[in-house]
Picture 1 (cartoon, one colour):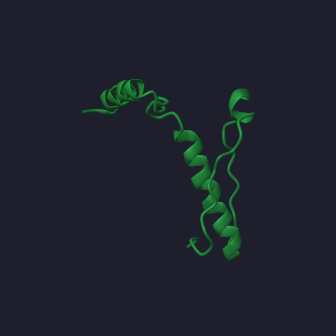
Picture 2 (cartoon, helix red, strand yellow):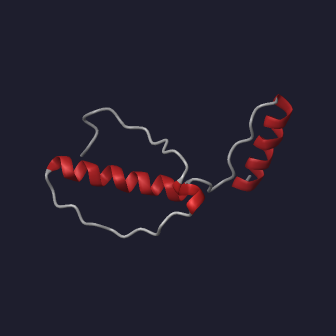
Amino acid sequence: MNAIQQHMFDSYRALQQGVPAPPAPGTDEVRTVREILGWREFCRVLAGRVVRRRVLATRPASAASAPATARVPEAGRCR
């Protein structure tokens, strides 16, 4: 079963149970990658290493206004 078929199955099950449908596959991949890169940069700063600046593509206006929902891991998880 591929990702699209699984999503269709999960959407059908959610409809039957009256709960919200899951997000489509690949919906939050770009945001997740940015959060991971931001966390790694934060860990580099805490370790006192040089941080290289990247220029990332700008977000669309609708995504820029969305609230951030990133979790902050507990202390001691930086490498």
